[in-house]
Length: 143
Image (cartoon, rainbow, N blue to C red):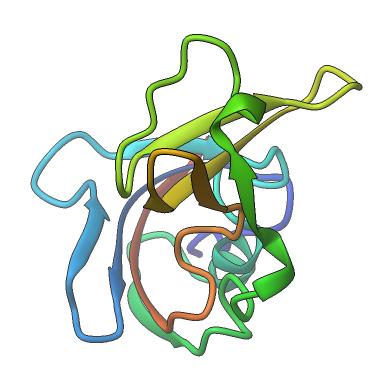
């Protein structure tokens, strides 16, 4: 009898995440498989949810619409700010990442979408927000 993936399992797997047009973003196929604990935030919750119920040895491809994957792009999470409000020692580059610290000490990252001499447009949406995702997975084992 084969084992089936359940919430909270520690699993070893190969996975590949791509855009709907099959532009690869990350893949472990052809290299070392990943080992992760479901529920610990090591994999995005919508992707983890796809793994529940898969049997060891099975390979699946999931096509997730934007709302099922990382959600719609939220324009309220895009903010234009003066360069003087950027973290000290940051040197923003177009499409680069900038890390900010909240008063609570939490860290959050934004993507630079536009910049000029006075201001920077920073997008705090997940990079895949608003995009459909192709998620391919092969479960190797449950530890």
